[in-house]
Length: 292
Image (cartoon, rainbow, N blue to C red; front, side):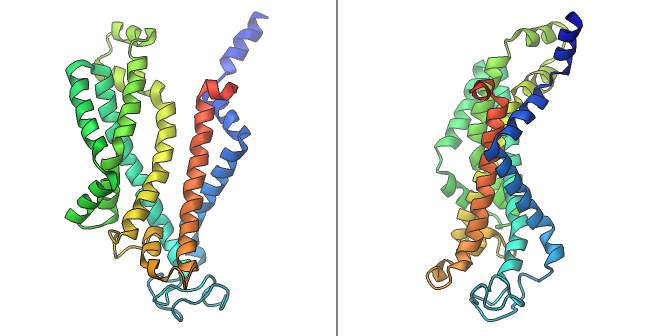
């Protein structure tokens, strides 16, 4: 009986259990399949449909289905292939979402970890800085940053990351405040581990589950943010994104619905898939929700 208990405990893996719970969540699995489909569309699509998205190929505002051999899903207001634009805009949109999320996570975890671990004056100063950024209007602040510099994808991603990190910082701080006084952290400190080792090798790995969930949701928020900036004319004019496709066709929305509906549908599908994945990860990593 003792050997059976030891074997069962040894085989238990929190990561494996979280994955098992994630797979049992039908909505999360659907979101994962949908997101993988978007990734395949973005990275495999150019090889299967090699058409220059900037080239005028047919009559402007051709309705989808009118000439499926030449333009399968119609053309935009300049006569460019809509399908080629959707494919080309996919990797640009995903790039902005991933890069902005990475910047947000980096700043948020760095600030939150320092504030939560050291406390006192360090915590007060960093939290006042966080509150300052939190009360600024995000869209307006991002517009100012993009307007001051060239509106490239990197600048847009940086602007989104700079205005989005306070929530991640507060979450990281809360996790560090909860973990830093636990027994295993005290044991590491007693064994001679310095602050850097304790922060990045002891506390942070144990605080990752809620941070990972939050990071996945930030990707979706960043994609919507980029779409908003592009809709206002602050996107990179040399790069096609789904947001810029919507912004460029806003005056044709009543006469050429597909020019706005198609990129909007892709944005909706991508953000929905990321939200479902984030919700599934939240349930998988959270024991209380898992039991429920």
